[in-house]
Image 1 (cartoon, rainbow, N blue to C red):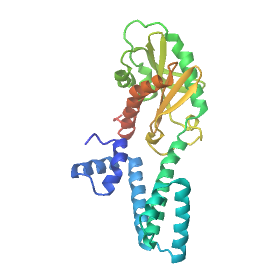
Image 2: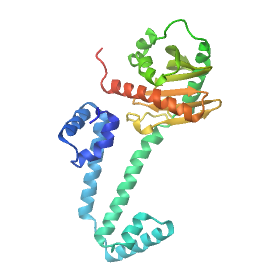
Image 3: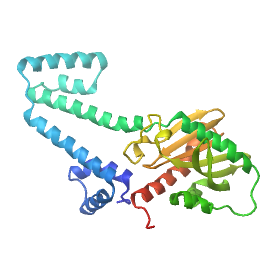
Image 4: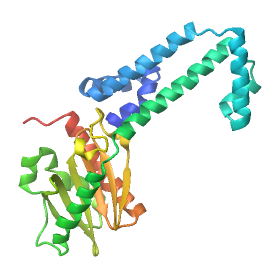
Length: 290
């Protein structure tokens, strides 16, 4: 099995709870849950949902009249909307009380899972202020590096003093920046927000990789979710003439700002920002000794 990080943990959590994993994978799951509070809470929430469904299955009862009404309603809905699920239950199988109760539980569970996944994504929507600040820093700071520097560029020492997690960002992003020249690596700011700023050049175009704190001002709703940022996925915003792509961790937002077309900027974000997020997430889960 791959190294157990938050992403892998979530992917196989249901298999773990169903007893479908190998012994060594079970150990890896437990070890990760012991040191990651977010994943531990996720495991507890899914266990609770499973227990609630099992309990409901043993108690759910429908009268004959309710069963008939449910049958008619589902049949109408299935005909009008072509629902695969309703056709399966209505046209192929007799709708017993148990089947009706089971169908309601399946629909309820699916809705619960959908809402559970939707809420963190909505809560992690980036604020217009952060996009403005990221573009402003790219414009205001990046424009100073249109010409190649003398000698190799490394992350400035002040970056570590500001946030130790910033120390190796240039090395982590370097693999995905193949074909581009790193022209600056430091901590700077715009409109009151501080960024770790890596400025790259590809021919005549400047690309910024920016890392900043995931605080209330960075998020549209003003509240930081208690998660690791994985569910937010890749967010992309167009702010003419730039494209901004961003990933999140529990404590940071990693952005790529460039004048490139959407597809190219997205590819850069996947190559550079995503590995940086994975690196930051590991540090946030297992901080190095002071």
